Amino acid sequence: MPYPFPKLGFTAAVREDLPHTAVVALEGPLDATTAPALLEGLEPLLSAGILRYVLDIRKVGYIYSLCDGILIDLSDAVRPRGGCVILVGMLPNMRVVFDMLGWGRFWDLADTVEDALNRIRALPPT
Image (cartoon, rainbow, N blue to C red):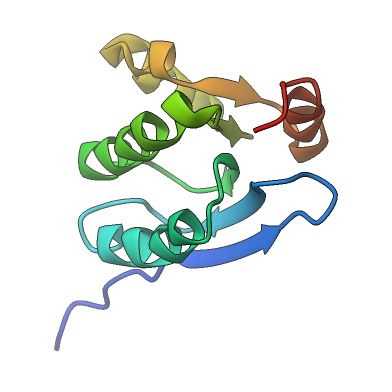
């Protein structure tokens, strides 16, 4: 019987009220089996000029280092052009691991999507 690989839920909504901004809701593990789906979902947003990302990870159980690398690459690609990546709703157990590994210094974290959007509203225009 084949192992049932987990699927990544990926829903993106480009914000009409905030230029170059998308809210991306992720669901499921971010690991080696879902990394291709993460890349596949992010690439069209980058190509469309999206520079500011609100990643809602409330329904993500864990983030494997490969996917953390993908998110760091995303951040590195958009920051020089006035962009940002804000992670929303990180579970407490993930936060402990992120902080332990030093990954917390790479991320802007928010408790809610609205909090993240308010931070983006306060940024200079892109």
